[in-house]
Length: 462
Image (cartoon, rainbow, N blue to C red):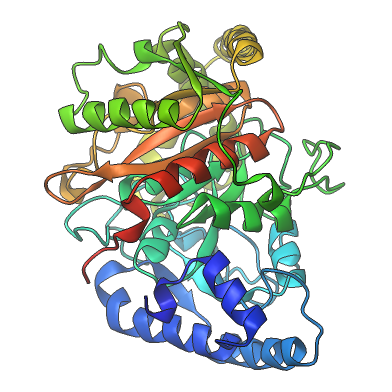
């Protein structure tokens, strides 16, 4: 496996043994960015000189015995809604084209303190909502498995860059599935942590009560290493929770005996839009987890439409509140898709928002009760593989329920891992939802499944 296709864990082990240097890792990624990103458009900004200088510093520190931990010397990239001091942060929008923050987002700072090397900023849907758009300052990211297909959103560049080996890992954001959908469509592992687990300070907001920040990487183990660096309370984020942060990597390994998985078949099996290959892959994954020792049972929850409706009303009401002052004065500078998705928020009433939050409370309690009986819940990340990018409808998120929104509504952690590939070569995703602040067990489940299946051995042919 060439250097850019190493996992974070593999690269970290090689760095510790002196088998590879941070400079080699960074140069490998930069070469692939130069060769492949004119097609994939995953980056909106690259930092080659800064990254090479940071790699040389990391190499010196590691050789001198001052290794900070498993992420020291690892090249990463950030979704372009994470503020970076002295480095342009645009949200993929004309509105912020000249925005150069003076301070880092908390997660940005924590990754830097862990020794990661920033390669650049990654494409997103405009302000994590409007895309894939063709009327913005930067083109939409393309799926490395087939550039004619959608990456999923809104962490679109994050999904494309990791899958193509243009970075070893990244951070995305997730308000209604924006980490897990690109993870599914691009064949990665992507974790939406529990609400309050990771600080959102310095990250452009979309919905104050639904936003989450989390890792995207090739494997669950890599996500564990990234989460370790960014998890924990932060006085800059009022939603931040003071909960103990375990050693996520130490929780990996072993069998799954004693763990119980509840399969929420009602979310997907009766959906007429369920792709047969996704259904078959999900069934095979359920069997595999059972063979690994987990107890499998069916679980009944409210319809996915209920969870989705609560998420959509809350999200667009809060998003409109955030953007109202600017969209009134700079309407035409926003992309058309962002405007179309945002403006229904202007039509919602106070009672609409209150009723949505009341429904949210009921659904969160329902999911919490199910997770008292089971270690995790299981269903697909998406009922279909990535569609052609030209076929993505601007209001698709409003038109049918997404299977990623339930965990945003409830606040529980959710992990998407690759569950195989279609005959056309497109990835599919399996979703696991766990107990609040028990990301460790979710990552254990994902890691066990990945080690038992061949999906992590396959990469896009670029």
